[in-house]
Length: 150
View (cartoon, helix red, strand yellow):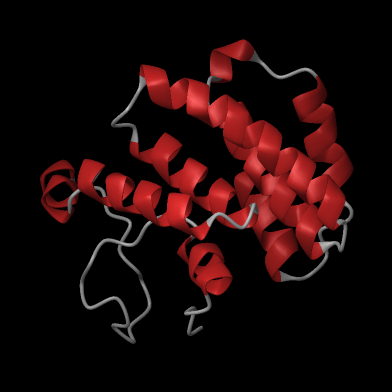
């Protein structure tokens, strides 16, 4: 679902995906844990791109509240930290977003990626990341901070 939402956002056609996300989130599956909040972040981003700033803010506030609960249970969870950072960015709280982004990077050091065989490295050949691990949704964060270059 994330891939479909992201594609709709990149294509600047988020309106069709918003009702699908709302339908899923109207009856969230508790077994999915923080993934429901992750989808709520995506809903907010899609709403923002669609021009519904008020709805996006509402979705992000709810996502932030949910993610903060998960963070208490899982303080080193990279995905919770990065989603919470991005949610705070959407809400305009750059200071909180940057603190959480730093925590996410610390929770998932580049050495951990090398050992596990997993990587969030930027696949682009341009080398703009200088070999550093790249957090999920980095362009959203960088755009909000004003530094995204692609």
